[in-house]
Each structure stands twice: as structure tokens, then as C-alpha cells.
Image (cartoon, rainbow, N blue to C red; front, side, top):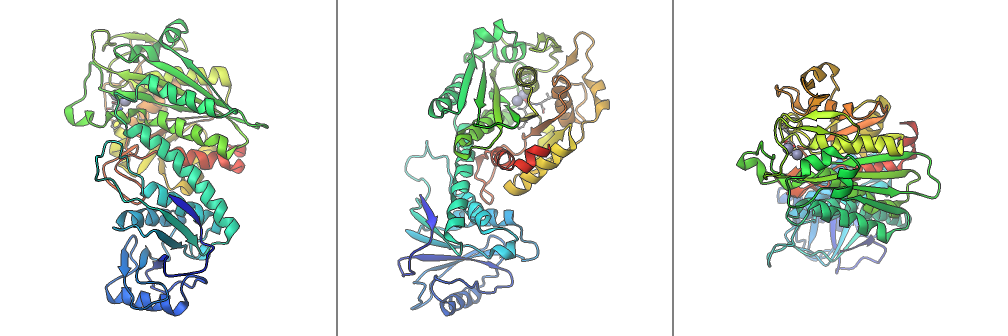
Length: 498
Ligand code: BES
Ligand code: ZN
Ligand code: ZN
């Protein structure tokens, strides 16, 4: 798809798309038809019942109009409630709703002032909405694929700002799509080794990125007892992936850790049927790390970024780890395995202690489809955030406001550590009680942070996979946290203070 700024002279070969609030005031735009034609087309839309409701889409066919014979209006909802992120959602929804693809679509951006955003940002939001909303995992679809868009131009934006916004929007969206593709592909393809190969390819392409893979043998030799313990029952051997992006002048170091369970059968504590179907999503944290790395060399933020991916497949096998087993993790701390389905925290324990020890990062953030509890509490739209540091939590909240990937902070209630106490080892992986499950998961991870002060944990179990199309989200892997983390990396004010 070709995306650019509309700079030509208006002609009828173009199809115009206007965004309209519920007040149904015709947008004033120079260069797209003329004011009279826009008003006439909008009157026609109103006659046909268009009310400007959020995500409402109508196509009208005005007779002999300067705009041509097809004009599209898209509702933005109430002006008072409109937020910039609404605009991204509306754009995505509109792209999905349109049943035809005009070869030359001119998308007229709403007024930057009305949405309280710069023109550059609006162009970025529109680009993300378009690319993410038209995404579809279609590798296995014979024939009946999605519509194919050709040319989309953004109008009502100064050329330079428009181009800058489109460029950033494209990099952000493609990074999220990179992650979506990895999540959507089957787990028999996306194995730990497959993830390692993706990481290697990223490093081969860019001088600023290096990679190191710890294979199964190295995991045993170097005492990664968690990653190995969880992965040893699988035909596909576990591995640990270390990525490093080093810019010319690095000011700080950020470590990103992503849960890479390429399939979570639950292990010997096998999951019930309905829970298994989407458990290829259990490497969504890893996919987010890889998605971020696919964009870093293009965006060149001024901070060093380390990516750490513990990758194991959690399977049922004669050699699987079992309930009642003990595992010695990388830190030396021991874990009593009370439930083989609480595997994510075990492999993350190795990765977190390794990250803190070897990289001494200023900030360490992990992304994990960790607990069903987080999904139950917050649903499909909101991820759980835990953090040991208020200013880091605030910075991530700000990044999330910009990306539109909603989060809600939950407490690290230290009292609940009681539930993780083991009689026989330093800690157990699953408590006997289920109340507070997301907090237990976070507290377990915290135990392996070796007193690192600035840590954040995203529990993305509810949001990594969508069961429905919504705004710019498509059914399947969502690529969640990629754009939030990129917003964070790209704003020094966010990471300098946190
Ligand atoms: N991968 C799951 C969590 C999950 C659930 C991800 C739903 C996506 C959607 C995780 O490994 C798990 O099974 N957690 C258990 C932990 C429990 C046994 C302490 C859970 O949440 O039930
Ligand atoms: Zn599990
Ligand atoms: Zn899992």
C-alpha cells in the first residue's frame, strides 16, 4: 500500500473520505473539491441517516459533484469526548467497514486543533489506524483474502509534518504487525529455534544490533534451570535469546524481557480443551521484544536497549518437569513446582536475574501473558501494569496514553508473598489459593529481580489475543506493547526521568 501526503490538484479520479463529529459541521478543507460540494455531500449523508456517531461510515453518491460520484463520511462521535486515540480507532474501524477499495483514496484529516494534537501526530495516528486496521493474517487463506488497498493520501496536513507522521506511523505499525505475525503463526512453526532465527535475522540486517543465542547445551552448562526445566519435555529444545541495540551515544540502558512460551499446554497440569486453542499466543511478550527490535535501527532512539527472551515450549512428555519437582534457577534460588502451568514466571525468573546481573539496566520491563487472573480482571482491552517505581509507572502511563494501548496499575501487595512460601524450597511457583493470581505472578517475578529498583511488568494475558475485530485491532494476535514501548523509547523526557 502506498501512503503519502495529498499534494496533487483535485480531480474526480480521487475518492474523498471526511471525518465528521456529531455536530455534523462540514469540514473546511482547501484543495479537496470545494466547500459547496462538501456541504452538499454531507447534506445527502444526513438525509440518508448519517449522524456522525463514532465509527459510523456512510458512502454517498452525489449527482454531478466536484468531489466525484462517491464520497465517504466517517463519524468521530462527540467533539467533547474526542481524544487523539479515538481518531486512530475510528480510522481502523473505517478501513474495515469499507466494502470497496477506491484506487486513490484521499483521507481528509480532521482539524488538529479540534483533537488537541499536532498535525504530525494526526498523520501518525491515521497511518497506524490504516495499516493496523487493514492487517490480516492471510498466509493460510486460499482465495478469499482481504481487500487490497493501492493508494491512500492524507490531506489537510502540511507536507513536511504529514510525511514525518506517516513515516513514524509506518515504522510503529509495521513493528506491531511483525509481532502480530509471529503470534498468529502456528506453534509448530514458531518454536524456540524459530524465534532465535528471527532474532539472528534482525541482527544480520543492522549494524547497531547484536545477538547471542544460548542453546540447550549452554542453558544446562550455565545453570538456566528455569528455562531448561520448563522446556525439557518438548521435542523443540529451549533457548535463551539476547539482543542488544547500541546507538552512537547511549545515555541509559533499558532491558526488555519477553515471555517466550511458544506453546503452553499447561504441561502435566494440562489445560482444559477450550484454553488450549490459543496458547500459541504465550510467546506474545517475546514477539513484542522482537517487534520493538525490528524498529529500533530505523528510529534510532538514544538509549541502549537489551532484549531478553527465554524461549521454551511447555509440553507433556516422559521427560517433562513434574508437580513436586524442584528447579534451581539462574540466580541460585530454588523453586518448588506446585503447578507446571505456572511456567512463565519460572523462565522469566532466569531472564530477569540474568538481565540485572549482566546488564545493570537503568530500567527493566517485562511483557508476559502471565496469568488468567489479569485477563479475568481487566478483559481484552486493558493490560495490567505492576511497577516498583512510581515515576516509571507514570512514564509508561503516558506512553500508553499515546499508543492507545490501555493499562491499569495493580499493586504489588507484599503480604501475598506469604502464599508463595514453600516448605522445601526458596519459593513455590503456584500458591494454593487463586485469589490475587495476577499479583502472585508479579510478586514471584519481583523475587528474582535482585533488588533492582526500577522494574515494570506488563501482564498481557488478556490483551495479547483478540477474539474480535475492534477499531484497528484484528482478531488474533494484537502486537500489544510494541507501540507503547516505542513511544517510551522515542521520548527522552519519559526515560530520562524514570
Ligand atoms: N499462559 C498462561 C496464562 C494465560 C491465560 C495466558 C489465558 C493467556 C490467556 C499461564 O502460563 C498460566 O497458565 N497461568 C496460570 C497460573 C496458575 C496455575 C497459578 C493461571 O493463570 O491460571
Ligand atoms: Zn501456563
Ligand atoms: Zn503460560
